[in-house]
Amino acid sequence: MVVDEARIQKAILSGLPLTITTFTLPREMEAYIESVLTIFLKFSGQEKLKDHLFYCIRELAGNAKKANTKRVYFLERGLDIYDPHDYEEGIKHFKKTTLNNIDHYLKKQKEMGLYIKLFLQTRKNIINIEIRNNTVLTPAELFRIHDRLIYAQQFNSLEEAFSQVLDDSEGAGLGLVILALMLKKMQLSKDCFDIRISDKETIAHIKIPLDRVYVENISKLSTVIADSVDSLPQFPENIMSIQRLLANPDVKMREVAKRLSMDPALTAGLLKVVNSAQFMLAKQTDNILEAIKIVGIRGLKNLLFSYGTVEILGDETKEKKQLWSHSNKTAFYAFNLVKNFKHGHDFLDDVFVSGILHDMGKIIFSSAHPELLNKIRRFCKERNIPNSTFEYLSAGMNHAEIGALVAEKWNFPDSLIAAIRYHPNPTEAPENYRELVESIYLANMFCKYENGNAAFDQFAEGPLVSYGITDKKQLDVLLDRFSRSYKNVIH
Image (cartoon, rainbow, N blue to C red):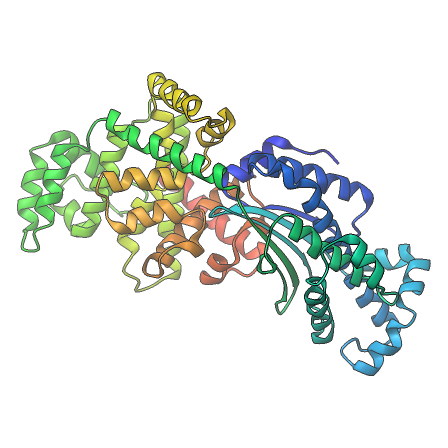
């Protein structure tokens, strides 16, 4: 199995979970997982934890595989795994029987679609590692595991554990005790590990705080980059004067239209947006008053922020043109998601411009002049910040926070700032902006999925549920419809 380092790096920098699925967990897969983990930890500044974490992953994946084998074994013997008497009867010979014919059981597991999935993701300065399998532990099994983990807290060394723990029936006891000791060695509390069940899966979860110095370096550099906005032009005064006019609750649309008409370039830009894919007008308009009536006061405020940002950051380079193209498609998909699925919600006016501006941090970085980049490199050298940290940021890491910091400097409304800051991780968004952020997240993932840069199992569950998307087939149908509509309106 070939490890694609560039693809792994792209997922990490985009904030996407790395996912690996296996049905039988052969040795080749274990070696592949170890290689992926090594690269993942390198980009997270946590290489020193590799050996400990690989042991934990291998132990948990092995237990998940064993749980799947157990389900096949009980099924073939006609025993009910949830019945205490059947469980006691079946477990007597489980280990010996399955080990003597393991190829048969592994083949059956694969035929039944019983998987083991590994998820690796860095979110909000926490490394999250999950091992999932689609057989749900019985209450008795879950109790037994939690009991073992509590029992493990009394040991301080492997010697103590080996001398006191013995488990011949299923073989899961000592492994979990060693895992708990590994977590102790990494100075992680017992709260950093848990095993829980959902209606479909058993989920083992390890969370590891990122190294404090690494996090501080990322934060310092993000602030320096955001402060570079001072070297960019100030937000256009002609736009800010209209924004101040719009802040007056008694303002008349004719007055706004008159002020806009005094700026031919701004008028042309506004008409271009109103006649664009967002509004899908049956007939294009060249009347600025009519355009304002179409978008409304709130919509106009948002469009002015969008127009001003594009004017400042421009699109003259190939990289920026690609970023703006992605942003436009994201905006179109997000607008149509809300329009089709969220009837009566009041954030429809915000969603298109949020899509346009969601990757502002990346675009700002691509706008940085060589002098600024040299200044940041000097800053890294003076503060002993590794060059790799700067390179990760320049490739997109923390772009959402950088974009949000700049949006705050430009006095963007809170809704746009939230969409920019939280679109990679919608669960962290403030409750009053959660649905807006979910729509941007989902539209952004649609684009990545469409381009082959994301898989279905990399989508966060929450936004999919919010929009009633339950499986890959449903997503494919919806995306095909949106994609064809987008191609029609841009040609």
